[in-house]
Image (cartoon, rainbow, N blue to C red; front, top):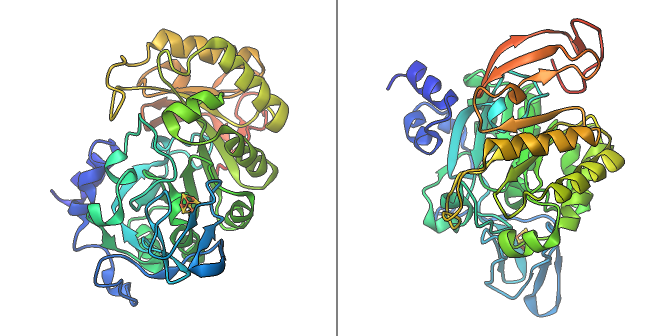
Length: 377
Ligand code: SF4
């Protein structure tokens, strides 16, 4: 496959796991000055941990606060205590990379039509039973094929492929925090932007620092009740809500995605509560995407979300006052488009991940000049 065909197929969103093979040999690996350990695991000291007596450590990166003895790893499987010092094992260890339209993340109010150079390592700090990237997220670094791409090589590759954005995505970028942070700085040096696609399960202190070096964060809000987080995510809702509030208070652009799973998190009352909470805590302007579930991983016994359910939930969220509520994984649906909340005109027409038309002048509606929140240039 030649480069043009590859980019076309990648943009169509059909082959991201294969993409790394297609890119082999053309990425600027010569920029990789520091080599990883022979094991294929990195040995870079982790940030956000406390040293405890008897060579124990406590990780402070995410709300799990894993407490570990010598040679033990945290829940995420990619951070290890070696003799009382804590290391990230996945710094520069890229398990998947691809060129994605930013609409695939989905981010709809952030440089529409742009391509993001997207990377992930193995590992995750939660364990969603419906994970669509479980082949890397639920694996330890030894269980996946990785390729060594340090931060400067990632930024160089993104620039080479004319991607204005580097995206940290697929698995959970919080668990490769050090790699993501340093890559963001390298990307900024090349005047690229950084997009973090996260579950929001991170502590306030590392999030405060991350916010200083990235331009946008998309948070997957997986439900609006703790029971779902306990039974299907193996995580906690409250810290995620705190992250959403913290990001909204910053200058970083925020969008929220809610994957609607039939019978598990699709109760209208729950959605109303969530929409009310979002409006009260962060305002009506941040986009909310309801996306369609497809049976996968450990939840194969449920059908895809009926489109009528998605439409009903969107209606409820808009009744509660949210201005930009989208539907995802329903190509061709009118709720993929952006409409002006003032005059109702269509501002951005989409089909799947493709932009068909933009009716905006800068950051304003072309018809009534209403300012549309987002990052448009
Ligand atoms: S980042 Fe990993 S090791 Fe640290 S607290 Fe979270 S799950 Fe545990």
